[in-house]
Image (tube, rainbow, N blue to C red; front, side, top):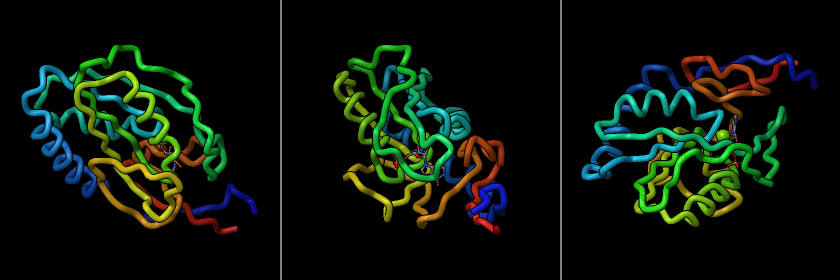
Length: 179
Ligand code: IMP
Ligand code: MG
């Protein structure tokens, strides 16, 4: 199959994303209402657009940090083995933290990241994911807050890539091969 020939089917519009992000931010702000400071942790690179929009809607004092794990490379298949490529800059012990992920797919990435973060003994931890593909799950892990549950299709846009492309789309679409 020639992987250069594909089209992107519209799936979630920029407007629908913005509305959902606003309501997720309201839930998060309510949950952490009395926090001294919330450390918002984006998982690179897929969550960069989501975290940028999300923090602008939070009515809390926040700090932003990033963690990068090894990715699929240019493939559509999960490697299942997760490595930390870039660790947090700050300490999270006794801090309130919010983990921000783009998609939970097989669950291996989130599972690995959550074990690592929990071992550092944060005060309260909440996990939010923009997208969730529950039918793909291989390990039992769940985000506390999910933007949209989607069917098993490979998606791009709003930060999410296919072979590093299409991250800049303002909406979410599904990849469909044509040749
Ligand atoms: P998991 O470890 O299989 O749950 O994979 C999670 C990571 O794989 C996500 O953070 C994404 O970076 C990537 N991923 C999963 N599904 C898709 C997709 O449909 N399009 C692009 N990247 C994806
Ligand atoms: Mg990711």
